[in-house]
Length: 185
Image (cartoon, rainbow, N blue to C red; front, side):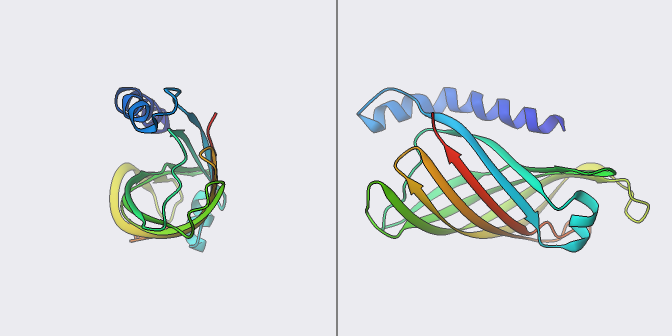
């Protein structure tokens, strides 16, 4: 899908304009900007969605800046994920965009477990050529949220499990489980 490339280029451009100067000022330690890959595996909970679009989806992205380890006081952030799948007769791109609350369970510097929840706007672009569906490609929106838990290790690595719950879009329930990792170079 061409939207994957568009979102990747937009994220890199936005980060180079906004995040780099902010990161250099905030850290005070080094002006070196950290970036790195984020990889996730998503499995839809709905059997119908798994049958149409496949059971194993990918969540690819580019992480910018330090891996932020949340404090025990908690923090509110903005969050965007891109999840895609391509099957024989169908393809889908999901972009949950939301407001996220994260809270760390300790103030440990090296390894810090955390948990949180989000409220999301779901932006989708999917098509299905199955005879039962015959849905043309198009951008559609829905609502949802997620609950998650994870562990950040230093400021360069994290592992996270997240369950997304979304409203149905064209009778498809795209809710599911995402396991993701990210690291910074």
